[in-house]
Length: 274
Image 1 (cartoon, rainbow, N blue to C red):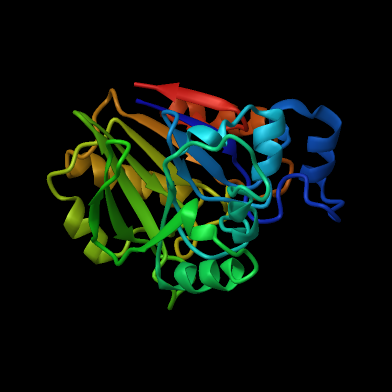
Image 2 (image 1 turned 90 degrees about the vertical axis):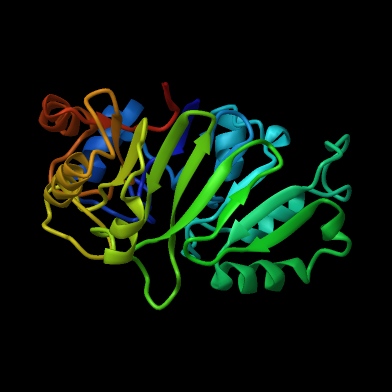
C-alpha cells in the first residue's frame, strides 16, 4: 500500500489568505514544502480521502488522477474537507470519456444532507456518482478492494465526524483526522488492531489542544497508548499532518523537532509506501 498526501493544512491553508503572522510570512519567503493546501490524501490510486476546494489544484499541479478514483471517504462536513459541488463535475456534462464505474462517496448524515443539496443543481448525477451513508463502526468492503471501518472522531460535535481504518490484504492504515484524543468507544474498538501507518492530526502544533484537534503533546499521548495496546510497533510509519500556521514554525522546524521522536512530517505531494 501507499498513501499520497495532496493537502496537509488546516482549514485556512498555510500561508492563510489574509494572514500576516510570522509563520505565514516565513512560508511565503521559503516556499516549497512550507506551502500547504487543504486536507486530502489518496490510498494507492483509487481510494481518496476528503474532497476540499483545492482538489482541482491537486489534480492540475500535483497530478492527482481523479479518473482512477473509485471510492471517496469524507471525514466530516467542514469546507476544507468537503466541497461537494466539484464532485458533480464527474458527469457527461463536464467531462468526456469517463470510466464506466460510478464514484462511490461515503460519509455521515451531515455529509449526506449537503451532498444532496449540491446534487439538486445537477440533473442525472446518479449515473456517475452514488452516495452511501456511514454510521460510526460501520464496516464496508469497497468495489476497489478495501475494507474500511468508520470510527468516531472527537471533532465538530454533534456531527458524527469520522476517522477511518483502511485495510487491504495484510496492510492497514489508521487515518485520524480531524480529531482530538480519541473517544473512549474508539479506543475500545482499536483493541487487537495492528497498523502499518498512522496519520495523526497535528493542527495545534505546540499548543496544548486535546479536544477537536491535537498538537504535539496530544499526539505523543495517543502514540503511547497505541504502543501499550500493541496497535503499533517500531516499523509502523507515524505521520504528522493537518497543520495550522502558528508562531515561527516552518516545515524544517517541525521536522527538526519531531523527526528525532520517530515521526514523519507530511507535506503536499509526499508519498509513504509500506
